[in-house]
Image (cartoon, rainbow, N blue to C red):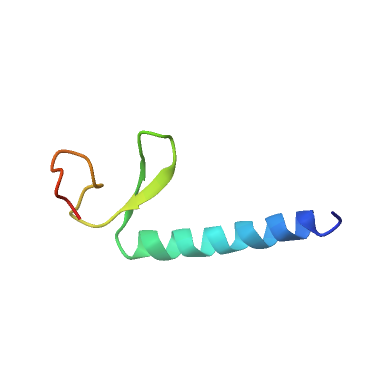
Length: 55
């Protein structure tokens, strides 16, 4: 139980690192229907939005 705060801090550090990488690559943050944050590829759209056969 004492290591839980350390785990949260490490997880937050990785999330910030990978968020910066995705945004540098041109991905844009988008909130989906369930409220989760997703990253949309450059020039693309999330599956299920318009075309049912989207990647």
